[in-house]
Length: 220
Image 1: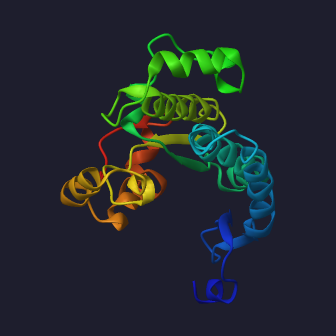
Image 2: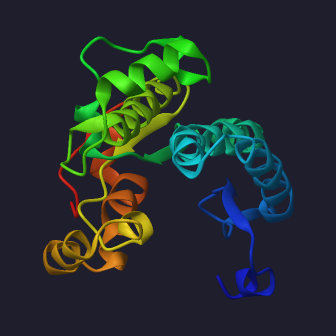
């Protein structure tokens, strides 16, 4: 829509769709509020004793906290859109097939916060750069597993999807060794391809027939 170009930097949620009228959009500028929240969280994360500790905290933080905060802001608009359109609003969460690396013993909530239980578990997991092995991969997998649960929690109210964007080039491997970074560049897809699965789930009519699903195909 031409008029949409007059409001840059906003999150646009379909507000009403009527056959005789143009779509109307509600401009929800989350940038300032979200940045303030993230900055506050990062300051809290900095209290961790070392860089590895901060990374362990940031993994579930980036995966879960931002989604919960964004949903708390957008849910009233999504509900209104559902009422006006006569069909459920769609919500697409970016997950990963890394959820398969989550520990087999499920979610231990004492491990999600700092303390003796967490330290003991990290020591048990150890450290490894091999996918699926070590504390970093297992906690990363746990964060994606809980993200899928978060997505399912919204499946009754909205057409909710959790998708795997595929193996794409990103900042995720910036702290890896040189060999891993070289391998990543060789096998990973260009970053824009990471949006295809989300676009499919969010826009294609046939995707609306399978609400509450988890797509692990990547790239559609």
